[in-house]
Length: 215
Image 1 (spheres, rainbow, N blue to C red):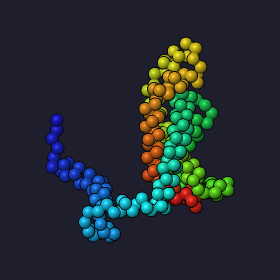
Image 2: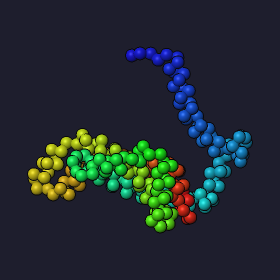
Image 3: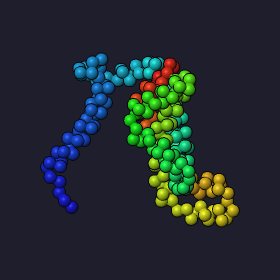
Image 4: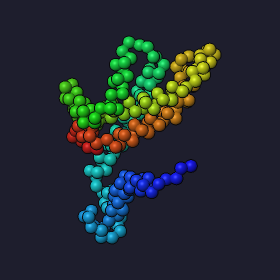
């Protein structure tokens, strides 16, 4: 086994320090008694206590969680169906266009996605609020679910499904009794990824939010 050189060790330490030291400092200073971030006035939990009395922040957090739960669930269903279509039906008219539309949000900048959705909602006259944010989050998280589920379906043994069909099971029952339980870990992973991305998003939410739907 090759030994690491001092240069490699220093590079790794500096890299991880650059990534995680600001997070550690943020956690430490959240217990700061002072209102100023740059001045340490002693250890205190007063700001966590006042957090529960900030109704505006609590309302925004509740909107964020609702958007994340709903968008992640819808994106998981649509992403799983899209992955099934791309893996099981390799030849159908418009497949290239369909796959391109599914994977476009992966490479498209968030600013472009948010602005495009904003123009769409304005063009169709849809008032911006909770539902526009949810639709926007479904749009850009569905592709991540599709990628995760598709990677699992590519290694799926279809002979199990064929055996179930030969024994008289309908395609729908075969999917829910055979296919879905096998790919369930990938589906759940896609849901968690979509939920996390929804919580993390700021740019697209700022374009598609409206009165009463502050995240």
